[in-house]
Length: 461
Ligand code: ARG
Image (cartoon, rainbow, N blue to C red; front, side, top):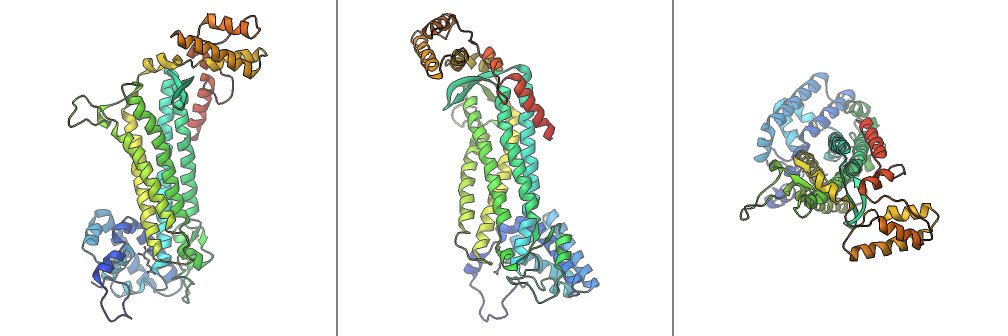
């Protein structure tokens, strides 16, 4: 098999180690079906320009569809394992030449791997962008559904900042907050998918276009692009869409990692807020009692790892002159690795949620611990005309006294605070439930506001 697509001007054989060093076959195998698609588009450019006959075009299409079948069945991957082709594009070209006979020799007319790789990556980015968007929507829906359950159950907890008890909130409010980043992620993914099909690089050749009358319009239309690209030199070196997709993928993985962190803590017995069921937990080879939340720990770690990998992909573009450079092969490999692994992170994250249950009583019981109603007491003073600073100081002093005596804030504290502030009395919520119900602002944890938010989240689906 003639594995290389070049070599006519060389007399010595290539160094095998260097050839293998330069190969991207293992990295770009995931692009196989997109390359075939791209080649089908190129056939339209060729036949539209009269460069191949209708019969030849038919032979090429049929062979390309056979390759698609081989990709679907796994036979193509098998072939790749024993191949010395430089990349998936070379391997498909070689396979088409085998299947189509002399017509196969015409497929690469007017085409360079440069416009081919750029187009193939856009088709991949479009497809994966839509898949990512669906996954992000699914996660948002899972969290919205869980929020609705907890709104019904009226579960509360001590909302925290700095991991310190801050103010009582509904668990539904927290779950709805967790859904929001995935709504935004879905929008980002959809935008990348949309932008990926804006302009089609096919027909750009290596860097300057072609002297052959390629029907670029036909190729672009056949592949679902809105137009042919406007500048060949830009088109062959543009990696915006795949980098944007990798970026959006990392962002979503980071969103998942932040929730994963909370669940790791919440499932620790010291917290006891949540439990991860058997299907998602792992045990210890030594400690018989252990129940570890590995999926969430790994989501957390992979998000960090992907952040680094994405930085690597972007870094390969730094200072790269316009046009194609082999460096872009590394951009591609790193960005694809980010995309594929981020999909795995989101999928595992969504799946692990099936095994998460909450200890509603424990959470609700602790919602008041740590003087979480203190802000409401200060707010009540402010509503009665006391300045924010005076109110803060008066409630702070009451908290210090209660803490020293090892008790929560009570009616006697309110009376003393009122007296210190020159008021006859003060009415403030002393319990978590009352505190939550007393919230008045839009977007707050008040049950009516959370219900509104859930309705809005559901309306998107
Ligand atoms: N394997 C290369 C890549 O992925 C293909 C492009 C090669 N182009 C070239 N001019 N050598 O980027």
